[in-house]
Amino acid sequence: MMLRLYPCIKYQLAPFKRRRNSIMNQSNHTWVTEFFLLGLSDDPQTQLLFTVLFLGVYLATVLGSLLLIYLVLTDSQLHTPMYFFLCNLSLADLGLSTVIVPQAVVHMLTKRNVISFIGCAAQIFFSIISGATQCLLLAVMSYDRYLAICDPMHYSLIMTGKICCQLALTCWISGIVTSSVDTIFTLCLPYQGDNKIAHFFCDAPILLALATGDTHKAKIAIFSMGVVILLLPVALILISYGAIIVTVISMKTTSGRLKAFFTCGSHLLVVILFYGTLIISYMTPESSREQMKRVAVFYGVINPMLNPLIYSLRNKDVMRAFRNAVNRRQS
Image 1 (cartoon, rainbow, N blue to C red):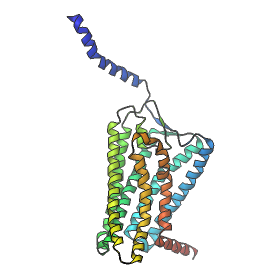
Image 2: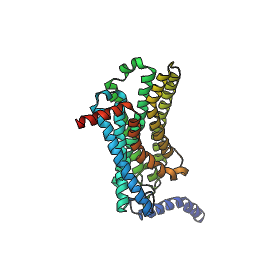
Image 3: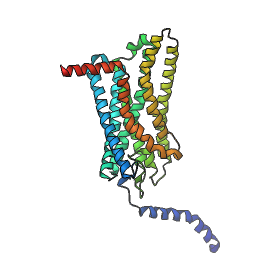
Image 4: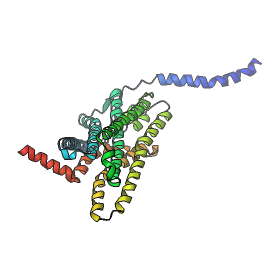
């Protein structure tokens, strides 16, 4: 009887032995304390080109964002809800660019593409804060344009200074909460062995590919946050602009239509550029992750520079404030 039971007992114990062997094999791998960023290219000439491009774009981003913030703060005619939210958007742009670009430039110049585990965690945390806050701010700005065009009689009663501050604070707090969830779910996973990140900065979806544990819950959490921060604001923006288009079409004068479209044109262009690249990066399946680096260059490097230019060059009030500031300096 014992001889007959032995094969059954041996078969029942096999899974436990495989699990023990798996744990022993994992213990042979050292825990990751730093990551190696593979960057955008291995070619020295291409790296030099990216270094010059990134450095020039970052300087333009810093100057453009700070100038726009300065004009909004110093010119009384720009003390309106739209420019208040635009000032917050410039801060978020500046934060996103500062978290990503300087580190990438240093790595390309020194050719030592190493970042510590804590540094990688900090980069993920602060970059998601800036990106998520921008998403919500763009949605709030679309609501502001909706009220200004579709309900101008009650605009000043609804968009008071207190409400504007509360909306901006909500955007920043929501960005912090979203970033905390994504960062915790990403970095609480075990990372052993492979520490090469196929990117030029630490990004949560890319980092998940290196985790040695089960990433199913982390992917669900990041995707859920993406739905809340990306898709819901996009829905609000589409609803707002749908109502704006209906109102503009019903206007009797051509000048009124042109003014309304001109007022919304800059914001709509920024929305298309920003949301388009983020949705491609964070809401696409695994098979399309190879394009994330190219998309990240746009939303993390180029787009923060374009926002101040789009709002400044297409805005008469901002250009007037800039001329007044220059005249005050000269006098």
